[in-house]
Length: 376
Image 1 (cartoon, rainbow, N blue to C red):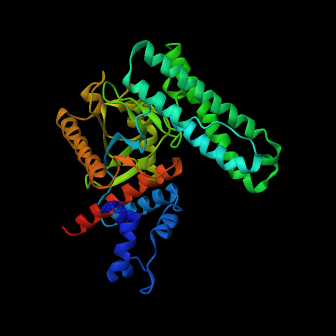
Image 2 (image 1 turned 90 degrees about the vertical axis):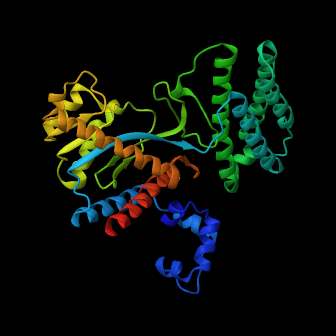
């Protein structure tokens, strides 16, 4: 499993290596006469929950503490983002996606209900291209026609969902749930397109749908930097570069609201708070500094002072500068996670699998770090 992340192997390539390498099968404790296929690997790996991966990471961190590799006395905390595997969410593309998936489901329902409908997919694609290539009134007119097609497809789906034969067939309940699910998302996309394009409203980020297939995706804005469609994650590291903790929240929370929870999680992990903590500037506030000192953390350094005085945060200016430089080291760890362990973009589907993917990447990273520490 971790080999998949460390070497960025697909399930097909991983299955090949397990078949080709006797030592790989012995390492994975597989029978010498058995090599799992890619579908078996995918099915079994995806069953391991995010909470299990989190516990595995905690076991690794405690093992490192027992051997003196990472004592957790000094920690650095930062936030980063992981992208979902979606295309850029333009309203026209989302409308076409909804028309496409609902039409496919209607075609699956047609033999049961016997109800005919018009396939508008080609017309929708032509309008999408017109929207991309035109400006001004012509573009708005193309949007109006695309919305008209989307509403027609929505009406077909509503009619099918009200059909008694389909609802009374237990074997087709999964098909009904899929149609109902995508219809709900499609209606949201129609609503946000009408508000944004036709009425000129600004739709809040929490009310937007950015993908029909990865609907859990959040809109992450960090200052003037690019907008990321995925999720924010919080990482805690130590001097050894081990990732001591990883949290994947929903939405786009303010970093300052997570200062205390992240420090408390260190107390749960080690049974004590760290002696020193260095955090990014977004975590800084007078209240967070006060609470950290109250917990017993001797020196707390924020990358940006944000109205705080150095003598409030650390015992001396020299300690504060050292902690600031220490925090910068987590940027290199995050870069390695993204470049070498696939944390730049999650290719697994669904919110649960997104969390699993992130924690698996962190565990894989820590295994490599531990191997390097033991070889010193």
